[in-house]
Length: 102
Ligand SMILES: [Zn+2]
Image 1: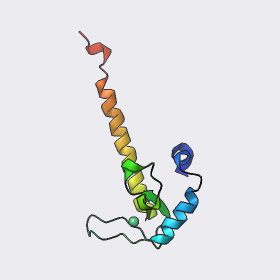
Image 2: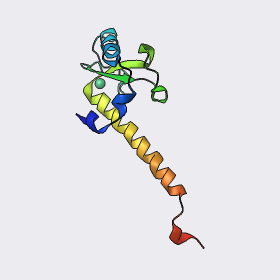
Image 3: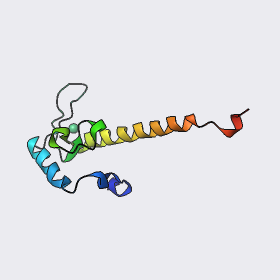
Image 4: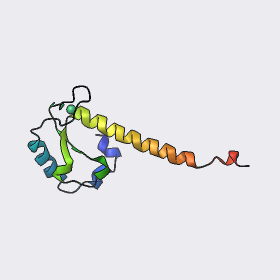
């Protein structure tokens, strides 16, 4: 599992598995991702639990959680990683290379 290289799991509450189960059952084990092409729910079998609002990733209440299929959970996770990498690159650009100083 990719989790082993991530510290993300440690940020989750101890009762995360129970919260996940609640959310998956509430959403009927169907992926809640809205497809951009059809603007309808993906509806594939969901076994992943995801934060709806990534800016509130500390909010583990069921209102901020949704069921996702493995595919869309993977897509979302990788784009979050991409944004973090972009932010790191942006921060790195602010540091001037010593060779460019007058
Ligand atoms: Zn899906």
